[in-house]
Image (cartoon, rainbow, N blue to C red; front, side):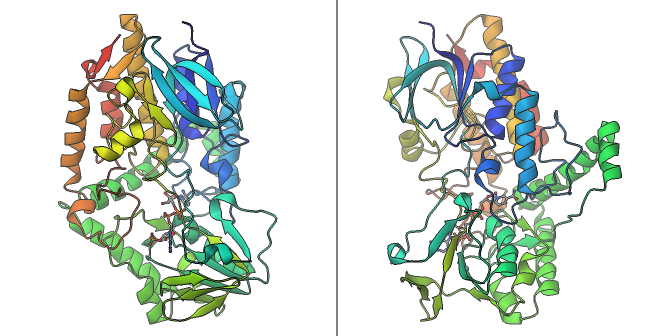
Length: 493
Ligand code: NAP
């Protein structure tokens, strides 16, 4: 049976577009990119809260094969990332593959026909030889289930569903959460609101952000002599790599590196916040790197302002016009901002229902066993599935490293399919088990298992207490392994 498509990609963010570019390079053109939102760009389409910017230098946070010489700043604002996504879609002629407002609910492997049946929310079924899930890690917004939340009569804004028309000027605003999103948003709200109360459960490590506008002359230099931008990328990527590999992954061997990063963050806090009590509240009690650290020059300073209050007593309940904390403090609120992040381990992994061979349900199997995926991309009993946002797939700090390493994996795997003149692949249990054993072993040196992460409440850890998100090796190793994985890691039919 001829399927409707050669490839269905779920998600039109940078991950899905990277996969589509790779399939096009392989000469595969019958691709459908199904996207639940009304436009492309993934995270950078969905998120548009004030202050949104990339916090990995833009020369690094972009495809290495499609540099953008015209980033306006060292860390570009979100709108430029969205424009870059559109530019990529145009350059690689991807828009004609995209279908927006198409919600994929489930996919089931049909072993008799050797294809996937993909079911969308309108009940339609389409078939595809290969299924690629590129649904992101941080794509299912988390809304806290606070007592009395339903009774709140004011406005509620989740950062992942920002209402651009809502002017916070003159309002009494409460924000719940102090993750990377809140770090960008709080200084912006503080500029507008009459009163801002920040409800913090866990403080976050924040280091200075070396941010500045990129002069037009430098942009022209990057455009005319691309080697100069490649050199800038090399420097920025190397610094991030150092932070990740030394500070986080080799904590056991290089504890002073991790401690130095924490000292830098503490010095930053001391320089920016005058009140010692506020400083104490903003100081994490877990090791640097247990939770994703952030970069900001304006976050800490926002707490010096008289109309900004840091509330660390736990939220007891929400009432029609206020939040009441465990210590009895009542804060009257016009607008409640939820910077409460995303649900990774309960509603993601995978974001859709996926049924493989012998009825294996990927979500259930991951939860009943350990979260796992060979090289962070394929899973036994799921033939012809490339699950881009899998356990242990995230390599390095810039998501683009993960994307490009997975593009390499696709290239090598499909090269072998072609050489053998076959069309179905499945990773072997042996290869998958060996990879899981390797990452488990490598993680033992990381801050996650050797450091003090007990109080971090980090999304790097899953419900079993395993740090199953990050791939514990350098990005160079990841890129090399994706280029050289043993071809007998797969069976071919
Ligand atoms: P997050 O890091 O998961 O932070 C969520 C915050 O909400 C945490 O402070 C959490 O507290 C708090 N929270 C959740 N439920 C709560 C509850 N019931 N009561 C009180 N507090 C609650 O989410 P995020 O800030 O959206 O960031 C997610 C990730 O997005 C980042 O780590 C980063 O990877 C990415 N991001 C990147 C950029 C960028 O510039 N590249 C910008 C923003 C975000 P606990 O810590 O106590 O759970």
